[in-house]
Image 1: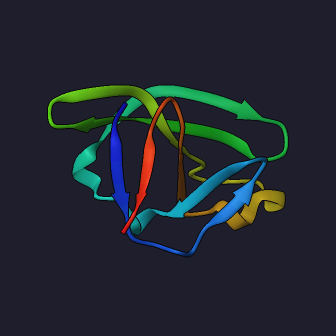
Image 2: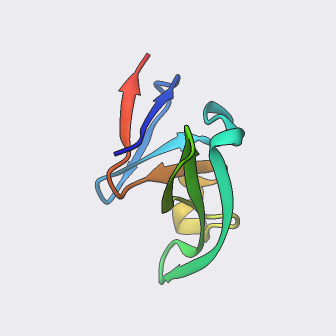
Length: 89
């Protein structure tokens, strides 16, 4: 399990996933991934592999670079899964 410390109370909950402001995530923990998926109402998602202390969690963060209008609340936000534990500051 990889643990991240994010400092933000500005969260958007969609379908049980919390989306954090992109600027609340330390970019050095994120490695670009070529993985993409499609959601009919949110649009095309892109992924990052999370790297902490040399450990990688493949495609454990995702975001919508250009979300559809119905999902505009998650523009410039990022969400996590695959065992990522978010620690409250």
